[in-house]
Image (tube, rainbow, N blue to C red):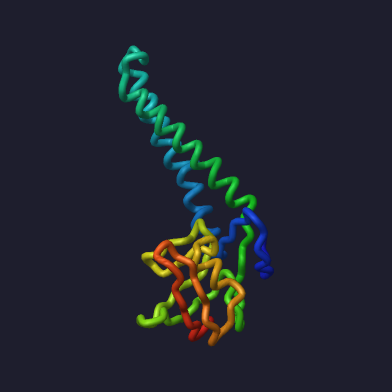
Length: 161
């Protein structure tokens, strides 16, 4: 579903157009390449004889179950996800690149994304995380108070792109 509307609904998954495309590619790998590899392993294991005591067969069946579960998960996610095309504005929304300063610390830049694209080590923060929830709807030059396990932390929003 394509939209520029970033209204947050409970349980809603958000993806950037790039994230949607990447997850689609990942799904195709699980449906084609991985399925074929597992099928080949199963055939080989069957050729070894007695399946009741065949560790290779058991491992391949387990891998097949995991692969199929991942396919179901990705298909569901892609079907219900709201694709957000970010427009630069003065309010933090999903897709915003936020430059801010943590009180008593240096300047930090992060991109607010849906939970499936979150990767804090590369600066992608989930809208479901404490910092993501606190920043949503905030504006440039506002101070945002984030509740963390170590207490409350203040951030000053310097820029929103």
